[in-house]
Image 1: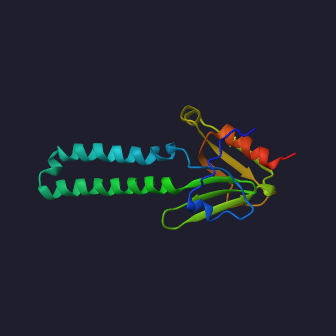
Image 2: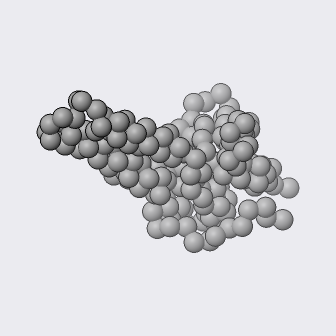
Length: 169
């Protein structure tokens, strides 16, 4: 019984990394909670910019422009982080686990299912509340490119899905 519905429609940015004999089991984005930090930075910068705009520091038009241009740079950084999140995928196939990241410089981390000797997921209190967790995988005493994946949605279901693939009968 499949616990997580397979979309069978992985984006082209992921399909190019799949082998011909592999089946895409699950393709998901990381949890949107990965954006909590950048959202906090943008909001804090907005508050600081608003306060500075109403103080004696912003008497001149030039200083006011500098304050808001700096905030605009922070906003552009935030939009960049959202764009990166939108193209990052965690993929479970019939043969391996993949994590594709990066908007300009594409990085693909992979671990064959046969090499996974130990796997666990962790959930913090905030992770339980928001619905995400962290996968930690070990492989026969070797350092792997894919050993820890943060902000995984539905960690219990995905954990059971991966374990089911690893320990086929």
